Length: 125
Image 1 (cartoon, rainbow, N blue to C red):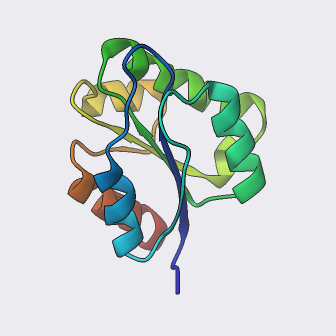
Image 2: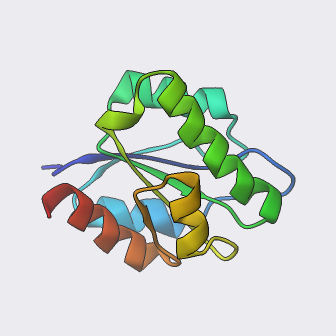
Image 3: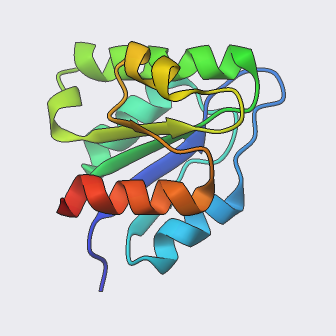
């Protein structure tokens, strides 16, 4: 039985990718995972959040350009009136806790294991 749901994906941009370990780790913790894959445009994240109403949106980025696109996703959720109903976590090698806070994310995790624990804490306190 799933405890909560999560949409995950890597932002669009050159060489965007997501680590399947992230989705697998969250799934193993009991989350229902909707994996959007790689090179995901902002609008697709918004559509997925509107359609699936997940508890968590996990954004991955390995390049500076894709890291900046994480903030675009958060702003698009705000513009669509969907931001208040979801926790957004960001991470990967180029994102820092400070950068995550500046873009308006609810949390930052540098690894898949830490992302799972962060998602759990955000949902269950």
